[in-house]
Amino acid sequence: MEYDFSRRLEKEVYLQDVFTLAKRHLLGAYLCSNVGGCFTAGRITELEVYVGSCDKACHAWPNKLTPRTATMFRAGGCAYVFFVYGMHNQFNVVAGPAGTADAVLIRALEPVAGIEVMRRRRGCEDIRRLTTGPGRLCRALGITRQEHDGEDLCGQTLWIAKGEKTYPYAARPRIGVDYAEEYKDKPWRFYIRGNPFISKK
DNA sequence: TTCGGGATCGTCT
DNA sequence: GACGATCCCGAAC
Image (cartoon, rainbow, N blue to C red; front, side, top):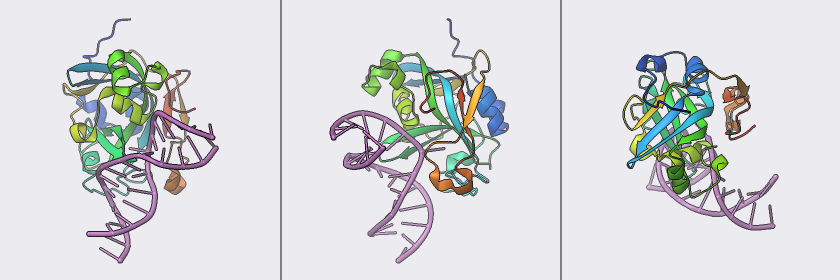
């Protein structure tokens, strides 16, 4: 299998509806990073949608611009990276036009390139555990809030390359958003059906 | 200025 | 299945 990681998703793709972006363009695409002189890439297998205007699970709800959420209000096509639990970074793709605060959390990847680099960064041999989880994949790809929040996803450091096809997907409730009241059970987590590289069933 | 808790993970039982 | 690690944000004081 030959991969072409230079076929970046165009800026306009990120400006459309966040659900279309997530399911049709991001699922099955390749998240690529060039950090510390090392190239790594993985197929996006699992993600979650967050909606700034109405969704109580979204950091930016209800369209609240704070120092932390500011990057989510930028035009689609940049990275929103935040830090939680005192140790984990989480990578999101910002969606929609400037002024909206929708984003897609990438929850799992299937490692495709730079697997030895990922193993070294993660301190873990098992390929199934390298990038299955939002904190794990950030560490494997070298993504941090300090260095990459706001990063342009059409650039040379972090980018998303088009996948070869679209995949059949499953929809499930999101993980870890029990506080979100009527939004906690929304089936806004999507993953590639049958792919073993997902964080949770 | 303080304080509570988080879009998690690895380890231990 | 439970728990501790450990920093930052945002709300309240």
